[in-house]
Length: 240
Length: 240
Image (cartoon, rainbow over all chains, first blue to last red; front, side):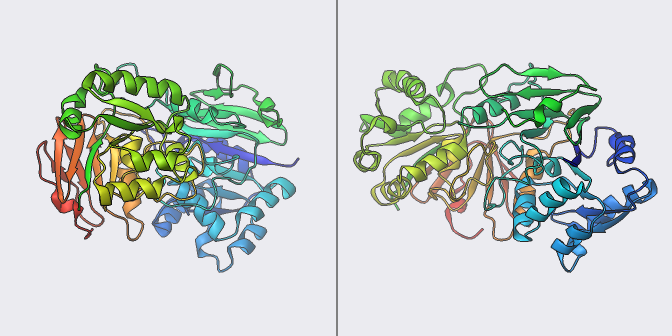
């Protein structure tokens, strides 16, 4: 399988600018061959402003940005892309728009069959997985399904947060929410990617990058911790 | 309109037991005439344990608890109920089950036409409103719609949290999430009910109870703060 993915937990890390914390990984991932990146700004309301932000960041790194919302034919834009970057925002809005624009199947095909490099951050990482059922976002719009692009056989929880022992808030912790997901039958693994973490997938090899590590949740099993640099290739086999 | 609702932000306040912080309001709401309360435990996986918890709390207050999941005919159970209490947990699971069991319409009819007293906490408060689009929960299952029971013409965000100025987490604040909801056309008001707050609705009169106040979000307008005891009856008129 040619699949190449860079799945980033969060586009902006505390105290730094947009995509600054993963800049080296972006350069390594897109490399010198990619000249133009197709940007998907569907997760935010103001697509023009979001595209400017992506353009201002990626152009100095050597990548021109074309936004899918400026294309007259979004499916053709995916078909012709050299690389794709789906940005964060609201995951429900993003997924609904991917369905409305009928680009979801074509993105899947191009990534899995052609090896189109796919970068996602936050909501853009959620939609790369099995489903958006482990997003943190509010369900502000109703998509036709929670099933996502399905580039990997597991789910991700971006912006993963450990419980705060000093909190007096009584809403469920992130781990409790993921446990509730796993009370449902047939639910896949969930990789909790802390802010500052990202997952690099190249074919059948997956590596945890960044500085903060990740926590893996498997239905019916205890959670497991992984430190930066861990080989997570076992996640790419279909067995949950 | 006969409608009587007690919509509680959270079932358990930090440092106290299940429903302790709203015990006086429950007694005032159900009063002396109600003898039996129909409990809806659909938001949690272990319905038996949840029903025991509700029974252990409400029986000493003078109310017997029948759980809808123990009824052979859930719609008939709603039809015969003297009062209903929908507990918290996962809002998506709760709403999906209300649709699956086909009780949603009957609950609406009995509350709006017969004046069946309706108490909700957390997820049980979310489903009383226009839609579940302002829940904080993970979308662990896919309901047929986000449209909820619609006992009031606005939405609620339970467990409302003010921004934490010391946070280094880069996920959206609660207010930012609700603002994203209001970027969508035709979205109703959202009442952010802090933990410790609850809304009492009697006919066309709504009053904010509890100790922590609420924050009201209206599409295209600045947010507004309301202190405990505020008259919020204007929320019950349909104008957004």
